Length: 333
Ligand SMILES: Cc1cc2nc3c(=O)[nH]c(=O)nc-3n(C[C@H](O)[C@H](O)[C@H](O)COP(=O)(O)OP(=O)(O)OC[C@H]3O[C@@H](n4cnc5c(N)ncnc54)[C@H](O)[C@@H]3O)c2cc1C
Ligand code: SF4
Image (cartoon, rainbow, N blue to C red):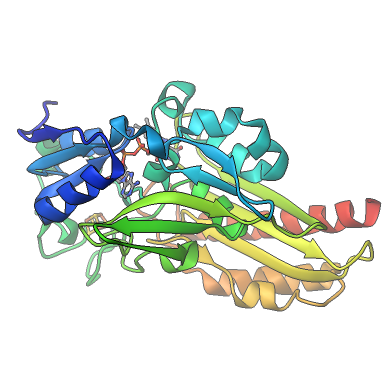
């Protein structure tokens, strides 16, 4: 598969990159590690006139402590650097675990956390070569009039699968979004697009520059789970992360955060499922209730490999497993 023709530009500073994004508008696209984007270009699903290669922006490759005890991670930090960071492993083990579950060592050596957060949604039709897709009519995401995954659907049903995202959401991370002359901090819950097409709410002249993770509560336990057909080089069927905070060592939950990926076109952040836990002593019955409520908040679609039913079942198992482990760890402390 060959690359389409494009103009390659390598800005040497963030300001220069923002000027270029402003100037090129919809004709320009960012390449970070390129592990997904270059494949998309070869598949001819990404056909930008200008490719802004971020590789020269060393100012966005860092992990540093934030005043107040949190961490800031520059978006060009590779997933390998995150896995290898003792600071991340100690403070946010689920981020380390999630980053370590992405693809293979070789891919993680180039793949960035920013590229993972901004990953496109996927399905069995879209993520194929142009030659393969030629046999069937164009779908919504490629400017056509149908979805091959769910016939008669009036929308795209590709899924969002990035592994680090549920972990970052469970940790209450925020994103710094910048464009020429402006910047804002937004929570991960407000970053994604429900339709999944495009996957997030960035404007064409914006990029994500930093990820801010707050310190997090003292008596919290965190868990990350990924189910995939194979242990390596496989996108998730489901990925789920949670942080459960306790008042004391008595099983009473102070607050909880649960985020689920791989089930629909955007990462789902549970609201009702965690609400029922707040201020309550966790018991088997409460775990069942919380699981039931999380399952009501997701409507799995299945554009790859397994049925929506299996995805739903897996989410239920992960929620129960995490809550049960959190309770046991809290009582044993
Ligand atoms: C064989 C294979 C297996 C894989 N397995 C997994 C897996 O198990 N789990 C998983 O999560 N991913 C997987 N991936 C996808 C991909 O490798 C990772 O998601 C990776 O983290 C993407 O990062 P990147 O730096 O390479 O991004 P790129 O490919 O450079 O970019 C991805 C997208 O993000 C945009 N982008 C990048 N950085 C920014 C930014 N700072 N601001 C705004 N937009 C930006 C790009 O324009 C592009 O649309 C796999 C890929 C391959 C080829
Ligand atoms: S889910 Fe449907 S519309 Fe979306 S990319 Fe796949 S085939 Fe196209």
